[in-house]
Image (cartoon, rainbow over all chains, first blue to last red):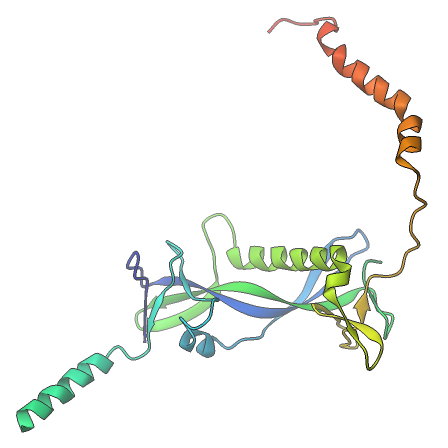
Length: 89
Length: 134
């Protein structure tokens, strides 16, 4: 799997938005204190759904939507298969 | 007391769903998930705190739009915040009797002297004695 920013070429750091359930309490002075944070979404689903939802993985450097390639060798395999088919003919 | 669970009486502990930000770092064929840190602040912590505050402020301000009426049980449910003790969504703002409304003319008349003093203070500011020279 490969994640690349098509705008700036960054392939190291990306930001991913995730829904979390936050347990909090009201203090007596009116401020909020966070007691617990629980992640609601799985990261795998999020990466697979890249490009299908508005909550996308973005580049940390430039903020553009990242491009996720799940199987980077897929095209290579297709080319090999096509070449083998031509050779067989 | 800002919010109240009408099922169990809790007014301290609540839960809500908000969006947080995490960072994916890819290096040497490995992907790691961690807080998104910039040189001067932690973006993940900042986002969670701000989103939580925004959510609570929204529910406290837009009380009507955050509540949904269920005709079967004839009760209101909060769309965003649930009780952390019993898990119920019957979280509402506690009822407070409305403050006695004074007509605006009467209020202006009562505060006239204070306003005149304020204006006089502003018009006289240039005529105050100069104590030092820049």
